[in-house]
Picture 1 (cartoon, helix red, strand yellow):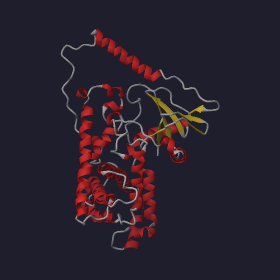
Picture 2 (cartoon, helix red, strand yellow):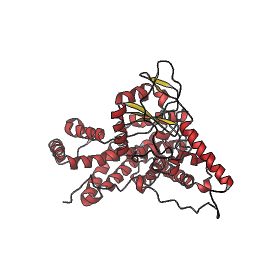
Picture 3 (tube, one colour):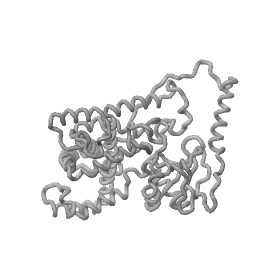
Picture 4 (cartoon, one colour):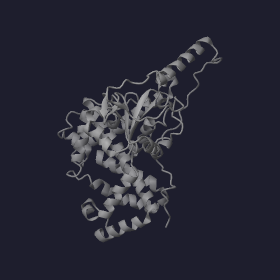
Length: 422
């Protein structure tokens, strides 16, 4: 039997292999030199603009009795990523986690004039993002994806407003219908196929997991597993776009002022939006045709087509993107823990034996189902520990403070970008 080493296996799916390099002919004219007077003046103004951005804000006046959060001092370079900070992912979460050991459970870090608040504990996260959610439910604008915050494409990146509330209500609706609509049947139908693929090709286990997630969520979303293929092609692109390690504009935000002809990221964003819109709208169109023919099985699309309470205010475009964006979020949040399960079982084989013994005792020669979960405490505990041990999104999606706030005597200023480091 081939051995599986999760710790050394490279994922077949990720932001690193998401897009091909953009090619662009140089817009710099022949004979261009920095020593031309007009160029020198422009370059000097750019430097002054950056310096003003970094140093010009000065210290904010604090109300009486209010303190400034513990903070990191200036970090070089002032443009781009500060030195010593790893790329996005679990390494970045550990880096900021180590900063908490020095500065406490909540601290601030000013980067290019923008204040970032880093939160470590579950209590502080709940106090701010749950108890005071109305002040922290906004999102920041993403330089490489201008318009996503104000648009209707992706719920997790959407700014606060009426559209956000309608999308959120739709999410609550589909979660409430998960059990009564028997959506659990879709993953059970894919489990046997995925296990067979892993047995036959264990060296491609990571790819099989991602395909499993894509097919399962496509069935839940549109009632057709085949739509998972196209869904998987657009996810790396959006992840690349919103990542700090993505387009250069995510680090040098002032580049957003350049025209599209010399901004390859703007050209790529136009392509990404169209591809994502097609990947979301075509499956809903097909689901509508099956619904009209009376053959559409229970799925999220059917909830909207039958105008369940909470969906009636979404038009076709909005419904397509609400369902589609919920689908790719589900792939990331399920695919990550499944990969972590393989990693954990390789590091802790004793727990694999304990889980297997419990499943054999309760289920015999059949696969476990959701009805068996109350009788499988070891399996449930193992799954919960894996989710705690390796978060699917360790740094989550940042929140933005809509107004000044005071938390336990510390000021969180309006516009601060708040990160919950899980």
